[in-house]
Image 1: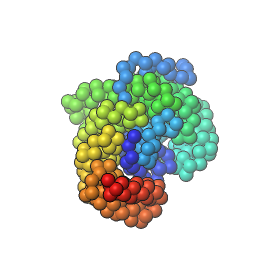
Image 2: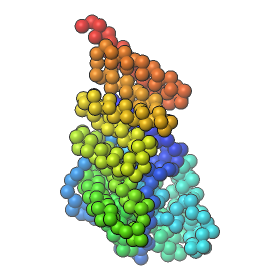
Image 3: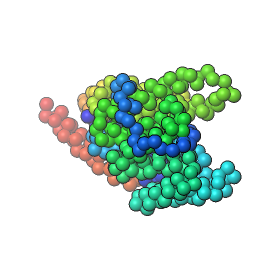
Image 4: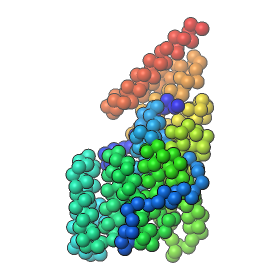
Length: 390
């Protein structure tokens, strides 16, 4: 088990809903078509069983919080939650001429539901979404029905209602398939990733692994096909979106692997995710810094302290250049690595860096980090005392 801290989600929207407000692995703009009518209320589990196993570390969790089964990792809920239905996304204008009057009302209600989620008024959001679904079914708006079901599933996921989330995500996927959406479409894979995260939270390991595998293999094939597609067929932004979604899947799968103590495999997934992030968003992007920290966590958990030190050093360097808000967490992780390496010089360095991190954490009023650093200083004092008694 690693003793390093995870970096925290920064935006108010992401903290309150689990959905990122800014561009990153968790925000890939895609759109899917509508559907005709639902044939069933669930998707067969064989949808995932056909995929061979492949293999998540809790995002936003603190040291030692690698529990995938009891609590859904925050990053797993970031699969473009509000991007599936481009015309009825929460930021679309109500007066969009492409929308019918009924759809404009639905847009307004979806905005209200999203705002309620951000304010953590979950009961109100659920009530609004049920009204929205009824209206969407009355006006037979295919786009609105799919989007509303997906948002209802996201809400259930956030509330820890995993059985409901599973049912709603499967319903969404059935509607999408009925409408002609292909299984390798980005929008379908976004929902597939969220369903995999539900299986992870339910501790349904085989289905979770197969779900992550399905998403990764599908997106690997898709990115290979899209790579040489001419601009008139596929824009650079569309190609980038597919790669970013693949990065999110790799990141999510790596976190699941960490929770299952499959650290070497997780390392490979993180490295691939980091490469995509840097190529698509630059090495100073917050997600790139987070992935470097995640790689340090994996190395530290294996006792590979020199390599962990290298990754944290890179993350710190980039955090300084980009004014990253979690700089104090990276400092405390660096101090923890020095402490585990042992030796007089390393222990002295650990103390100095812990104290610097403590000042910055107190300035930010980050109580969990302050508590963690105090524990680190206590452990450090014990180790220094033990080394003096040898």
